[in-house]
Length: 139
Image (cartoon, rainbow, N blue to C red):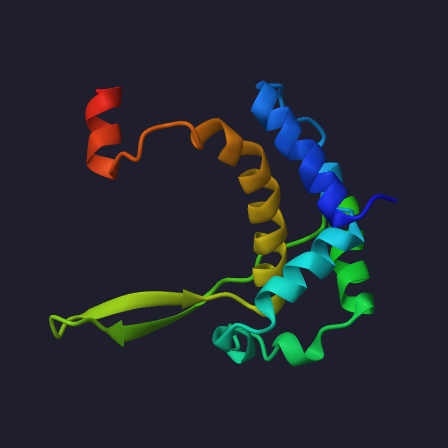
């Protein structure tokens, strides 16, 4: 089994050469990617914030990662609805904020790291456009 850095490096090289990214779902079975995602998320202040379940980073274990992977393998993983709360904006209005449960955060980070490794090389040579600039370009 390859470590997370090697997996993401291979994905990045495929992105640089413009090759299609295949077998993405199977990449979600790699424990090392979850450990890397955990290392990135656990120090975040929001890691102890619960979502719709009582699950937080302090209940993390290899067993929990293995359960997520098993559910994915059998296509039984179900995303949990996020807990919605509102936070104040500078202008006095309120902004909605969704807080997913810990398992969902962890899986989202794994998916984000895979997608970023693939797409980042393709867009790194692009000029720094704003969203408005991109919308004008595609119209």
